[in-house]
Length: 335
Image 1 (cartoon, helix red, strand yellow):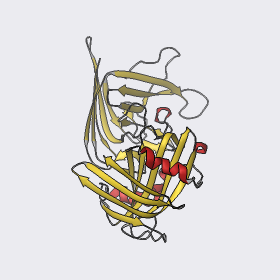
Image 2 (cartoon, one colour):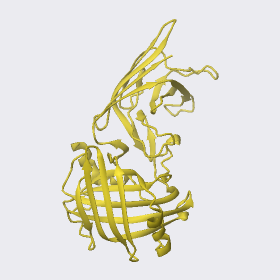
Image 3 (cartoon, one colour):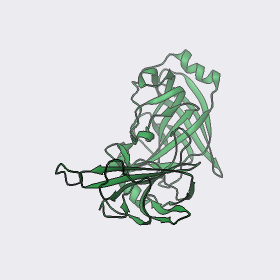
Image 4 (cartoon, helix red, strand yellow):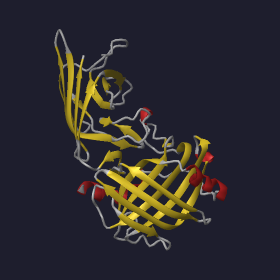
């Protein structure tokens, strides 16, 4: 937790907001939100620390209707947020509080009309209406300038009640009921709450490529990426170094032995930690997939071992690791 808090001010920009231009929507369109009463079914929150440098911590919250998503492009390793997509609407706001817990804060927050970012206020608030498109040009953004937001909790279920007013005077009375996990913006989608996740993998792929490590114009080694898939997610063990292979003779799976996560030493039987580098998701991580890659948890491995065992009858992989926020990840694969 203390590591996360120290990083927040410098790394809060890792979560980039939508590219929509703040165009004031007409009242008929906004009123249609109230008429349809489409439920807010998705929640995403990041702890931003004292990002406004006024001695007050900030938790942001993005609430979305079903079918709306953010294009994180995890399947191609691109982690940057490009735009909202889908049909529906999004509510976004910052809550200003003195809390620094890994859980989302509760209480009643009123509109910060003077941009003081005082404790007990909400700021940087807006609604985005998506008109059935997959690009920012299909969305319209309206500022929320008045009202109140109440957050309560029963066991693990949050209730967020919004009675807010747009800059053009339209009153919105909306609510969300469900789970809210607070994440670290330096590691998009890694929950701050410590947990244990056990994956039983049934699928395997192994991508081995020769590389020129010393950049002298000749291939001199190979790096491999192991991907294990399960019903609940995907586990990636990346940058496993090995000898150079002839074309067509690349291995289909890692050889037997014990592999250790190291800080990019590229020594035999090692692999690299998970991180976001230059906007890309890199290294080793576990990804709790929801089927399409939207709003799913990622655990970035920082300490881990992988044991590969093979005999005449069986082949197995066992992984035990710790993520950047202290969660435990275990993986078991048997062929």
